[in-house]
Image (cartoon, rainbow, N blue to C red; front, top):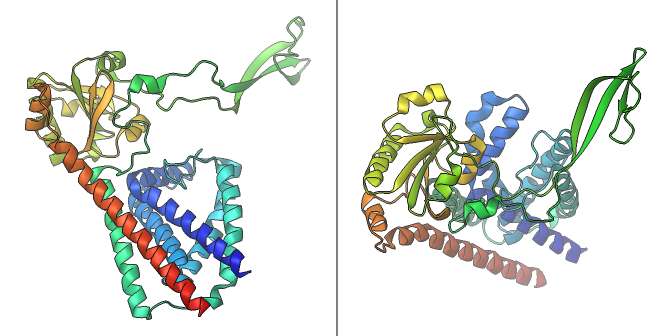
Amino acid sequence: MKIIRQISIIIVGLVFIFSGVVKGVDPLGSAYKFHDYFIAFNMSWLDWLSLPLGILLCTAEFMAGFSVISGIRQKAGIWVVFLLMLLFTPLTFVLALNNPVSDCGCFGDAIHLTNWQTFWKNVVLITFTVIIFTGRKEVTSLFKPSVEWIITGIVAGTFIMFCLGNLRNLPVLDFLPYKTGIKIADQMVIPEGAEPDKYQTTFIYEKNGEQREFTLENYPADDTSWIFIDQKTILLQKGYQPPIHDFTITNTDGVDITNQILADSNYSLLMISGKLNKADTLRLSEGFELGKNVTNMGISFYILTATSTDELQIYFNGLSFCTVDETTLKSMVRANPGYILLKDGIITGKWSWATVPGKDWFSNIAANKQDKSVYIKNTTFFVISIITGLLLILIILGFNIRQYTIRKL
């Protein structure tokens, strides 16, 4: 039984740590998922809580997993895991039945699960959780309570800083389809032989006051006494969907300029703002100023937004404004505003408002001079995050070794 319990501790701890980390990598993505749920359940008045709840959830998951697997405040971690599973298992069952949002977002954009897959994952996980919970009385403290609370506070504070760093600087690990280095057009292609969507079409006919439903195989094509009333088409099975889809850029004249931008052999800088009125005014002004500077350097500059046409007119300033689907913009870059640099349709740079290079860097790029300073700047947070993660792994391993030694003695 001790072996089963130890295996359960490792599985539950790792799953919760992984779930917390992949959400913490992309806190804005978690906020978008809360937004989707609030809209689906007619609770849009809670939308202002989307980001705080996103950060709170991933921190709770990570800290619960850390406590369970490291042995520090383990009993508290077991209680948190147990309560979260009691909440989310029935909730995911309801979501699987009603399917208000197609992807639950339990593993962020790292792993996409259907609502039914999520529910059965939780059924398996709650089994391990119950095993751990029933043995919670056997838990012994590794250190004095005050020491354990200090360690817990330091780890929690570090993780929250990690979340805020990803929020400011863009995710340290990019799970989105618009990654640096990819050619957008290649990610929009459906390969030959790919499984298409499968639909079922039902025809409704009426005869002598009676309505009946027919399929394509048995509808009364040759019986003119049946009068056609209506038809219904439902999706039976989703087919292959390319990583990038619904990517269309339209200028203010209603002209689709997607291919023009993707085929441009020169640099194009895209400033992305889902809703201009939700972006900080100063950040927008800095973006507009950057746009004027790079345009003078010969770099094409486009502002992509989902702002309505009427509202968009108040921002017109001589720059090129274009409309794009808001969901597409959210999957392009997790910032408002954010920036993507294209050349031959290939993403050669991607930044948030906080990390976008200055005009001197773009001047060097326009002049075909090499300037690696921005890449060094962008990798600093990545390196710090990796080092911190390795230290946490060493802490967990160290505490587990000590915990095992204590129990052996």
